[in-house]
Length: 344
Image 1 (cartoon, one colour):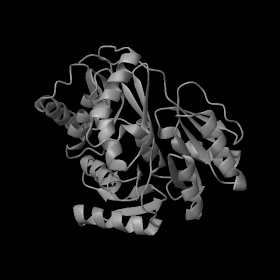
Image 2 (image 1 turned 45 degrees about the vertical axis):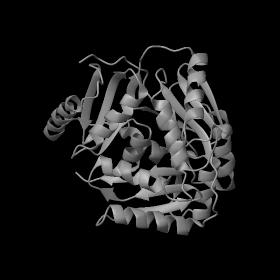
Image 3 (image 1 turned 30 degrees about the horizontal axis):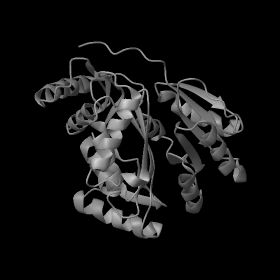
């Protein structure tokens, strides 16, 4: 198979007071990225930064201001916040409302933090492939060929502790999503990371691509284009505006993935909820739906505004993806932070 083009090494910044930054930095050394420690007021980040982790300990009332400053200066870079185990739920809700990607409890989630962050940033963790991983890789390569989708020859699979890292290129974005589904459905797979699988199809002028994307959304029966805006830069489509619900958002993104020339989709829409349901009621409804679909699995749901945080263990990576989709279908939920682990 063809070798993927080399990309610059990923960078992760850990910010906060020194006494809090040091243990976080040590825990994240398992990530295949360069880790940089910063003071809470130092908002500089190096080129290639894929994520920022802010330590809440010691910041007190300054935490919200620190989050706002980072999000304003580094728009598009995911911000994660590590909070003390006894951090109030109302404050967690506020962080999600400000645009924080995920909140982690420290030190309660210390052991899982590298795996969770590696998954959310599509990085994986450092490690070596075992004999079991090598056997799983052969099964995955066979399944990929048997699927019938013309993925192309330039795809490389590497399996470490059940996590599949996919690199190479495909010619259209929807093939990347299909490949993720095919691999995730294989028993033994804990996670599928496609950050290094790029879309390198025929180049379309941004202006032409923008017109085509808008036309596709206008003609879609289940999408109200009157509340949306589409911008394109170097094949990267940014979708902004308001959505009726998460189902409409999912449908719009699915349509854009099938537009030839789209290399990436950036979702900046806001889902406007029609019902003001309390967090606990939304969480109970989502938990009941998960329990009905995954009987015997203890899956926990916490809601902070329109953000649902999922925890627990399931049998496959496909179940992990399906749990997130199921949660998104519940009234009052517009985004999911998926902390579910897969049994091996």
